[in-house]
Structures are given as C-alpha cells and as structure tokens.
Length: 120
Image 1 (cartoon, one colour):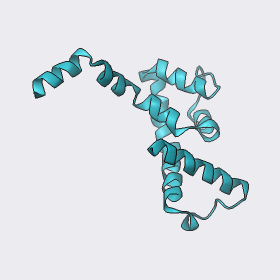
Image 2 (spheres, rainbow, N blue to C red):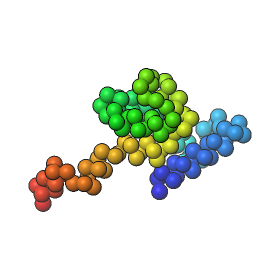
Image 3 (cartoon, rainbow, N blue to C red):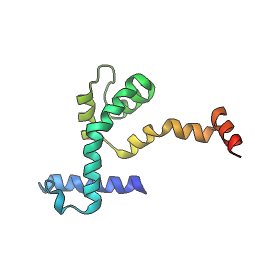
Image 4 (cartoon, rainbow, N blue to C red):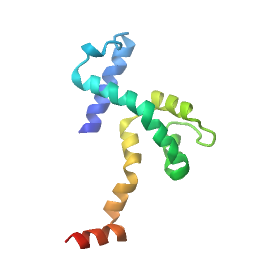
C-alpha cells in the first residue's frame, strides 16, 4: 500500500514538472509535500549510504545499479544520484534495502531460529 502511494505521488510530481507547477511546496497536497521532502533527503543522504554498499554488499549494489542500466565499476556518488533522479523507483530501493533482513527472517537462519527459541 505504501509503495503504491509513493508511486502515485511520484507520478503526480511528474505531471507538475511537465506543467511547470512543481516549485511551490506550500500549495502541494500533504502527501506530495512529504514525498518531495523524503525524496530530497534520500537523494542527499540515502544515496551516500547506498554508495557504501559498493564495498559492504557489492553483489546487491551491482544488481541495483544494473536495474538502472548502468555499470557499477567506476560509478561515483554524483553519477549514482543522477541515476536515482532519472529511473528511481521506491519499490526497487525498498526491495534491495530490506532484502537481507527479509531473507534471514523467511528462511530462518540458525541465528534467527535460535533467537526465536530463546524468546519462547
């Protein structure tokens, strides 16, 4: 539900951009204003965090960058930020950012299983 709402706001913003009406946050509906603020924050801070995946989780980083049609070999943070401005989907980001935790929970690794047993 939340991903759908974000995608709806993204499409609304695109319509604003096409009609040159995207500059005034005060006249935006609340959800669109929130979306724009989160988007700005993500582009400033979140992309820096994702860039760290290049070292900490290179496979996931490569898969994410490839979904945007780029090569991760010599990618710099400003290029990554540009990619996210162009073809970014919150759904793709969320899928990759929660992937390891979800996989750990769904597949019940031995650490997770031990945690479940200890708490019961």
